[in-house]
Amino acid sequence: MRRYIVLLLITGIVWAQTDFDTLVLKNGTVYFGEFSTIDGDNVFFKPKGASDFQSISIKQIKILQLKDGQFSIGSSSDILTDEAAVIAAEEAKRKLSTENVVIIGCIIVVVMIYNIIQTTINSVLDGLGGPTLVG
Image (cartoon, rainbow, N blue to C red):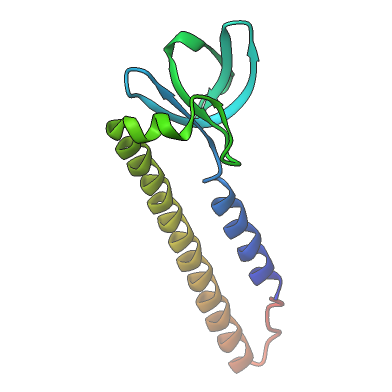
C-alpha cells in the first residue's frame, strides 16, 4: 500500500509542473515559468529551468498571462490577433503534456518491475522455507 501512495504523490508532483505563467514577447518567443513582480518598466520572470528571475522590459512583452488565466500585460484579444504566438504557446503546452506522460509512464514501469522482482524474491524465499521480505 505504501508504494501506491508514493506513486500517487510522484504523479501529483509531475502533473503540477504544467501549471506555469506564460510570457509572450513581441518577437514571438514564448516562455513558461513564474512571474514575480512588475517594478517600474521591468517585469521579473523566471523561465522554466532557470535558477533566477530575469528582468525583462515591458516594451518587449506582448502578453503576460498568469497561470490562473488573468492577463497582467496584454489581453485575450492580443492572443487572437497573433496566430503565431497562439500556435507556439499551444505547441509548447502540448510538449509539456507529452513530457509528463513519458515521465509518468517510466515511473509506472519502474514500480511494476520493482513489484515483480520483490514478488519473485518472496516466492523463492518462501519456497526455501526462509523469511519473506516485508513490502
